[in-house]
Length: 248
Image (cartoon, rainbow, N blue to C red):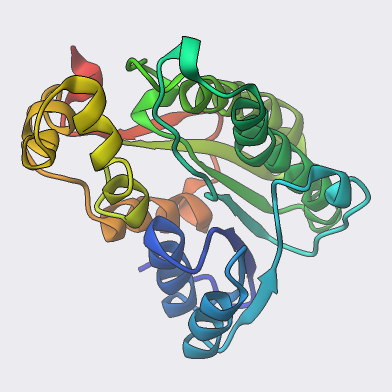
C-alpha cells in the first residue's frame, strides 16, 4: 500500500466528488489533508472526518491567489465546473470564469507550492483533467479549452520540476458519478433533443467501450499511487480512466 505518512496534501474541490475521494484516500494512507473548497461548511465536515484542515476559498478569484505561498508536498488540482452551450450562445464572462477557475488557479497554486517542494526535494502535482483534455465534444468549448490547457501546464511543470524531485501528471477520466455530471444532464437533454433519461446511455457513454460511469474512488486510487514514492519516475504523463473512449 502507498504510505503517505508525514506528507501534507492539498486537494481543491475536496468537499465532494473526485476531490473528496482523493482526500479520503490520502488521509487513509497517512497524509495530513487540507480540503480547499468554495463550500466552507462542506469542507469543514470532510476535514473533521479526516482530522485535516479546511480552506474555504474562491479559486475563481485569481487576483487573491497571486501572492499565495503553500506548504504542501502533494497538490491535487481538481476544482471545476461545467457549462454546456453552443459557442454562439456561450456567455463570454462564463467562458472567462471557467478559464480562471480551471486553468489560471491551478497555475497559481502550482506556483505557490513549488518553492517548498523544491526545498524539500519532493513534490507531487496531480491534475484532474478529463478525457476532454485529450478529445473534444460539442457544446463544451470552455471546459475542453481549459482541460487542454491544463495538460500543457502539467507537462511544463513536469519538465521544470523533474530536477527537483517534483512530478506532475494528469488523470483523464470519462464521465464520473459526481454532482458535476448530474447537473449537466438537463442541458445535455435540451441540446441533443432527447429525454434526460437518455442522456447517460446516448451521450455520456456512447464513446466508451465499458458502458458505465467512472466511480470517484477509481480516480482516487490512481491519484494515490501518483502521489506516492513508487511513482517517482512517472511525470509529464496523462492517464486515462475512460472505458476506452480515447482508444477511438
